Amino acid sequence: MAQNYRYEDVMQALRNADAAGDTKAAERLAQIASSMAPPPPAPLSAGEVAAGAVTNFLPSLKNLVGDIITAVTNPAETAKSILDVGAGALQNALPERFVQAVGEDKQSRDAARAVGKFYADRYGTGENLKRAIAEDPAGVLADLSTVLSGGAMAAPRAVGRPLAAAASYVDPLAMTARGVAGTANLAGRVAAPVLGMTTGAGREAIRGAFQAGEKGGKTAEQFRANISGRADPTKVLDLARANLQEMNRLKQAEYRSGMVDIKNDRSLLEFNDIDKAIKDGFGIVNFGGKTLKESAAQNLQKAQAIVDDWKNSDPAVFHTPEGFDAMKQKIGDVLEQIPIEQKSARNVVGSLYNSVKDTIQAQAPTYSKVMKDYSEASDKIMEIQKTLSLNSKSSTDTAMRKLQSLMRDNVQTNYGQRIKLGQELEKVGGKEFMPGLAGQALANITPRGLQTATAVPTGYLAYGAAGIPGAAMSLATSSPRVMGEAAYGAGAAARRLQELQKRFPLITNPQLYNYLYQSGQLQGLLGE
Image 1 (cartoon, helix red, strand yellow):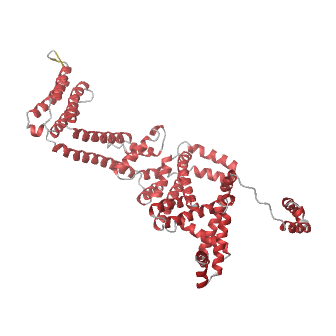
Image 2: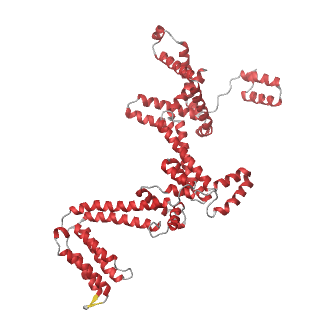
Image 3: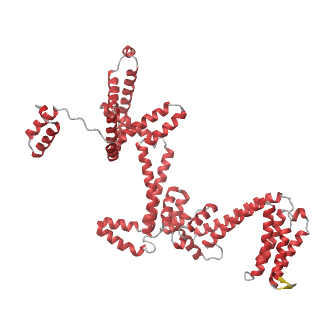
């Protein structure tokens, strides 16, 4: 009688009987349904395959992990399954006469056939492949990764390397790890500015806390000492000033190194442009044989006397690029002694000074590069010194406030431009001080700046929306100390994971777990 009914109708009637509690009818309908072949499933569209793969990825990954756990926790069964399938596959590949001669192992051959049937059913047709992708996407990727990695081991090196890379790329565990890392990086980029705003400490402080935890060592020690208040706050100022001194030392050392080549340049330079600068200068300060600008004329005469002295000295020593540089420095001394308010005097002597420099640059190209590098380094040092008030005349309070502002990114700090100077000072000088500044910015329990006034109302609104947990979360995210400790802890966790991967590359290799998954799946197929 079963053929008089549609399978779908019988199943619907069975569900209705179960819902109504009609046990007898349900048993009868179940007997009818068991005697009927269910209709084949409808073909899946590409959209249904994609939607199923996305929906089922996490459950599929969970099953994959379960198979790995099975393989790890049952090592004896795992080994037996692998040996049985391997032995059976070998027997199936060898001539039957040879197998019977040495003795057939029927259990192993049945195991190999069961595995073969499983994969044939799973991937034997296009429709089966689509259904496998939709229902078990992580398992399909693991199978593909296994095939690729096996091919990589068997193939020549030129082919094996791209196959191994492809195996790692499609491995579901490796994909998940990459996804977690990418999510962590994205969260860091988003969290730093958000938490910097909610705490009032600034994004650089949150980022510095994470980096301190991630780097460890002295960086972490400096951060911890400052966020806990154990460190002398002015220690970071000492480090910054030491870096500035180191930048000056490096500048001078580079200049002296470049001057070695200039000293070896024995070419003789001409005074023509220098003489013209002197003539033009006197044309400015004199008129009709009378002096118009007495101070300017006197200082120009001092500079001219230096030039005349150099002209009359040994050309082999004083007319070389090195000799002209010495003359420039001496004229520079005259220029520095002229008061800033005597503009005419500084103008004419400065023009003479520049003419000497231009003469060396034009006639000795090596000198031009040395002076360009020296000038750029001098300008950078001067900018850092001025912006961060690191000169000896600045008070400790002023310099500390400038340094602590590096953690903020508002209009007073030129929207983050000041932090770049601090980073360059730290990089070139070689002594870290930014972790200490981050710790100081995050040392307070209560929010900084305007957030001090908004933290309580925001917490009250969170309490109204989500109760005590919401209020607690709101207050926590507004606390520099809490968020600083959390960011530092996240960085430390990332560092420990990286150290684990370096020390134990085998156990952190996703491909190893892929093989364990295949082993665990074998146990399920063979009923071990």
